Image (cartoon, rainbow, N blue to C red; front, side, top):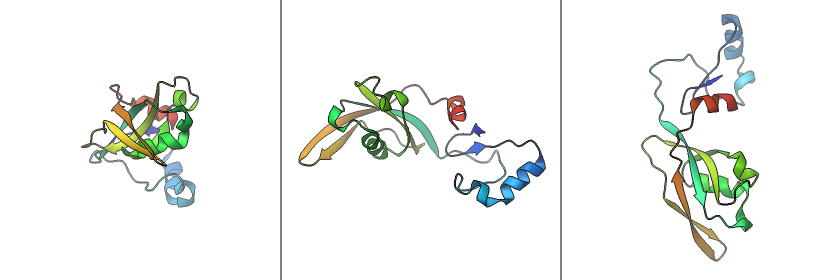
Amino acid sequence: MRYLRDKNIMCCFNSISDREVFVSNRSLWKDHFSLVGKWSEAITPQNRLIWVEFRGIPLNVWCAEFFMRLGLAIGEPLLIADETIHRVSLFRGKVLVLIPKSHSCLEEIKVVIGKTSFLVPAREDSVPVAEEWVSRRL
């Protein structure tokens, strides 16, 4: 499999018959893909992947669910960085987010927990998400 940006991947098969078996048996792919079709150069990505860095997270809320909710405030959260899950650095946490190409990352997110509220600074990582890295994670 190879990542082609947005939510598109390319699957390569050993033979045309292997491809036809896969495509014609929806039960093989329906849980993983919303659509399977022939690749075309006309397919243009509408979204982009970004790493979003969040700083100043209180330790009492540092968990996967909290980071996924922060990512949801920006776009579609897909993955929490391993170093965030394993608390390698409590200075910042990172979430991989899919956002429309035309949008930019919010600069801060207001968080309300009970009667307490605080602002969480957010910024897009300046290093683009490498397509090779995504392909290896598939």
